[in-house]
Figure (cartoon, rainbow, N blue to C red):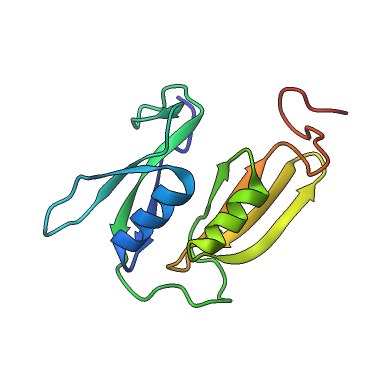
Length: 149
């Protein structure tokens, strides 16, 4: 079995705030799966995601959201832990929408030759995440099927 990433977790000082943020921005669905002693929400990221730890083939992964066990990250502090990068069609549009919903720009949308167009936001609780499309701002496909050159 390959050592694939099969699950991610977002830590939240205010879980409902981030549930609302990611639901509105990315259309993710959250299901309360916890208990009063251990709150936890399972995240369904959408069609094509794998939904189990057996790493069956799929196009993406699902995750979870859990209350943060300490202080939220300070703005400008180095990343502590992993971040996630989400494959999207419209990086610029989702960057703008994310900021409208309370995110902060961490790295502006940028064309990366050979990779695509990407940018990073800090969610309303200070967690960094990326948005990535294989299509550059000029419409050129930089990576994957249809990549030019």
